[in-house]
Image (cartoon, rainbow, N blue to C red):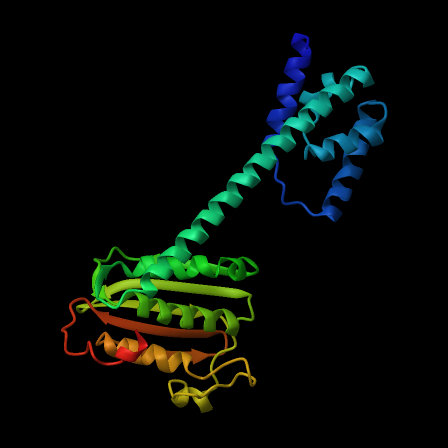
Length: 280
């Protein structure tokens, strides 16, 4: 390459790698029409082909710095554009691969953590936020389809608890929240410390719990889901696990906002170890 060709290539690569890939096909068509008008105004030949190349590189505006390249002979110009496109695609594919590997690693870590918890029947010192993040990772695919997760974690100490059973609590509450929002809405998780308790609040923007059944939701086998979709034991298990930890659970619900609050003592006695042992 000549010095000018190298300059053109580096400029194209710099512009392309700074572009925003989140553009719909419809938006691309509109932007392409705008590019064609600008190219005609600058007396560029083969405007349809050039506009297509710019769209491939996701370059849609500020053509002034690119004019020397765009006005070069079509053979040289197309060659430079092709090299820029190939390198940009290679970079993009590499980044996508890294993202996929990172997500897979997080999912494997979450599954391994959950598996390890599920085989433990002894109290352990753990951070509540670790268990919450493990469950959120397990639900990543559902959350990504339209749920915004807002985290508000105060710095809290590790507490002595049964992490496998608390994982069941978070799974039930987060699963119910996602279902209540039909997969789209806002899920807010707050962890804070208050009066010797660590409190976890899980709030969703779903349809809410009807007032006439709110007094029954912790009853075993009570469910509003169609036959085959729910056993009615989820919240009953949650309640017993919280009792086993000498904690408390309460909730309030109106359409558009349901919040479950779990309070766990920072230091629990051993008197409740036998409660709910069958859940282990």
